[in-house]
Length: 195
Image (cartoon, rainbow, N blue to C red):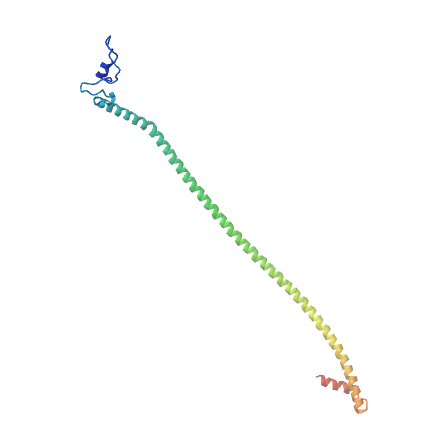
């Protein structure tokens, strides 16, 4: 019953000739005004029952629709996170492999550069050694030519010296002794002095 008796009595039509009643809440037998029906204690058990039915219905609705959707979304999110983590791990492995390959290529390039540098140094050293040998051979040839020329000049100078020494010795002996010395004796004396 949703309407109280007091409310029903107040809602009854007023007798003819009676003045219209303007109060909305008539006084009860205890002298208190009527309370709003949902707040009356006699209706609490039915209100609690309907509240329980409503909450159970809402719970079932939430369980069958929202929880499944949220659970599905969480599962999808978990799968996506797992896939992203696997993809990130794969990409990290690829990056590590690329880094290792780069470092290996860099080490190989450094080794090749070292080999090329060593080869260039060896070739330059060999070329410099060959050039040094050529220059030494050329210098030795020029030195031999110079020594031969010096020997020729010395020999011709010595011939001239011998001739000059013989003439000078001959003149000295003539002046000292007044006689002309023999050429053979002067040549033998010059040879003894030279030795």
